[in-house]
Image (cartoon, rainbow, N blue to C red; front, side, top):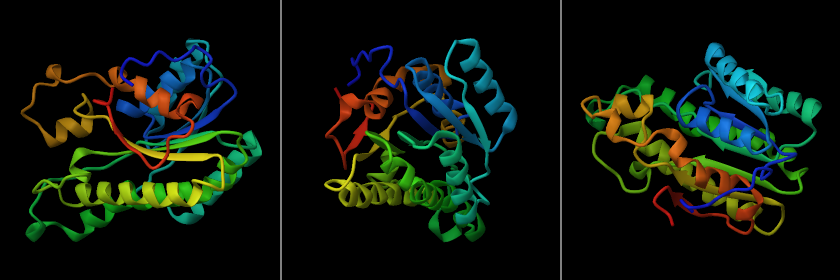
Length: 248
């Protein structure tokens, strides 16, 4: 799907929630979705970054987005259900969620991995997407066509040493995706998939590979074809699939 050319109105009339929307892949996806007609809910922990994305969307002529600051590290199920209530009041339904926010924290042997850090990473990368999805499922079911994208990583599909909680959380994300896809396959309008963007010029990547030349990596905008295809109606019928940006 790297050569996919989405129509300009691909996401017209759709409301899409993007987590980690302040920078990196989340920012690029939010801008791409807005450029193709969607109304965006920008969720993240840094208000200034979300406001910058908001301004860029408005300056580009996109539909007025909404900002929802939330630190996933400390968010509870109550926070997510409060979010769903706000979204229901403001938008009525939800046509898509891109689970993009993630935390790496550190690379370490399991022998030495700090338990508190383990909990924090799992909270952001796995527990948060579960709670957010659960809270928003009624809104997704109200849509005529809805898509949930979980952001994957190759270390969550084939393990590598020292990736600790990050890798385990990404394995969990793949499992969550598959379970939810099977539960919704025949009974709703929701499709559920995971997408590994591959090596991309992001803050998380620079933390994991501090000696790597960032100029050797693709910028987030180069990965957007597949993000658009999966979020839009052209991917109808695809569910429970593990995609990556090397897919043709």
